[in-house]
Amino acid sequence: MHIDIITCLPKLLKGPFSDSILKRAQDKQLVSIDIHDLRDYSANKHRAIDDYAFGGGAGMVMMVEPIDRCISHLKGIRKYDEVIYMSPDGDLLTQSVANHLSLSQNLIMLCGHYKGVDERVREHLITREISIGDYVLSGGELAAAVLSDSIIRLIPGVLSDESSAMTDSFQDGLVAPPVYTRPASYKGWNVPEILLSGHDAKVEKWRHEKAVERTKTRRPGLFQGDE
Ligand code: SAH
Image (cartoon, rainbow, N blue to C red; front, top):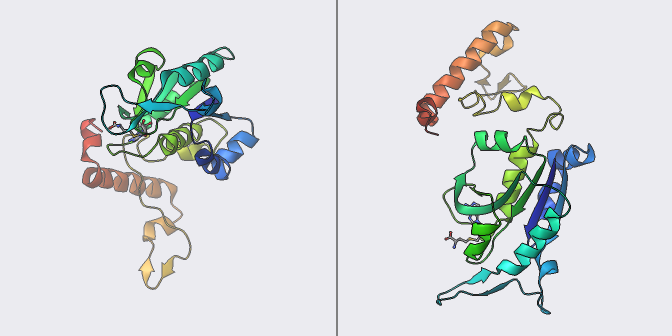
């Protein structure tokens, strides 16, 4: 998979991709990520990428031209499954959205800033809009990092134990059961006996029951299929 992220703040994106699972995925060549500085595509001598909003009002708007130039340049190199705009009013990112996008070959993610992008970008250049939740961030960079992480960890071979992504919350319509590690007793806080029994079938049954119990109390909507 290849991901191109378009941003006016490339430094913000360095951290999330330079450590742990996302770094290993790149080292193993399971994914490649290019971060593009939108200012490199500005036609303006001051490298401007935003301007005042037509009609007035507070806040700058990201101009259509640099974004169009950058996306056109990338489309000249490869074909994209989706050109995604990170947006608070986009489709909510869920595990099923991540599962679906993890099957892509090439993705573009566009990060907005200020008041967002000129609407013509959304009308003519974007194929999908994704929100990471009903709150407003200052920019799309952290959202693009969250989206990338949720997708990349699903690519076969990225997680050392492949089955572990499959037993995560939401994959089977349930949240995950509680987990414990050594010591078995700490300050008198004990691990459930069943987990120490060595009886795989019983452990599996207990985990399933706990997952169902937790889903009912924490995410009842998952049972009704509305989450
Ligand atoms: N004025 C806009 C918000 C702009 S916030 C509005 O009210 O909808 C600036 C940028 O941050 C957006 O263009 C978008 O790229 C990003 N952003 C903010 N909140 C986000 C969210 N919940 N999910 C994804 N991207 C978000």
